[in-house]
Length: 275
Image 1 (tube, rainbow, N blue to C red):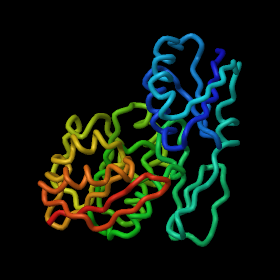
Image 2 (image 1 turned 30 degrees about the vertical axis):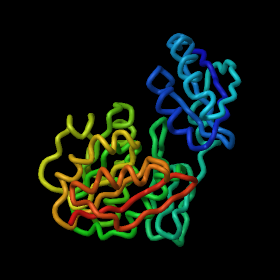
Image 3 (image 1 turned 90 degrees about the vertical axis):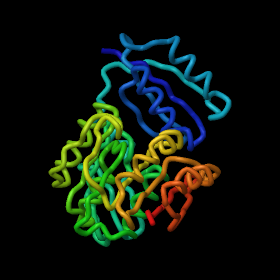
Image 4 (image 1 turned 180 degrees about the vertical axis):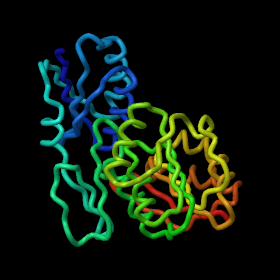
């Protein structure tokens, strides 16, 4: 099967957004590059009209330049291995793929084979969420990972001593990849499929993790708050620093108070606690 290859140069903050959008219209493999992303779709499944519309919608905001070509008989594993580097989150955790050599000097190690799922530790939002997790006691706690992607945050919760971890995502390919990554890291949890309202988690969770996007976070804030006991923590990311005020305004009616905020590459992350 021949694949269409699109080399997309764009602003860094739009990479994951474009990957998510392209996945919705039939693209099935991605590589992050220094300048943006390479995106691949089988020639048989490619929808030119939807693709042109998507690119047009983001052309100016993301400063997109595009080169199109053909790549026959791609060895995806080889291409992926050439473009995936390990990630160091301070001395807390070393995030690597299965073909990387383990490194000493870190408290924890996570093995992630991301395929086309999101959350490898490379993006500023995932990096900050991992760092904030390291600042909160997970020992013996129930943890909920909303929109889990590769499962990296759920795996981190397991390593930090969580008693029970529940995770889910809206995309079935994320669920498959997340479960593979859980197996690689000795996590017995199985990832669920659906939104938080579809999955309808039961009971309370002392820690809720949600690295999604602003609109989803605003829409689901009441649900997160309802799952938290008094003194429970809500960790949020997936939005820009200029959106912090909107998130805090949405959290305030549910007794969620700011404990800490951080930013990296204009992406923000918050630790909130229910009073």
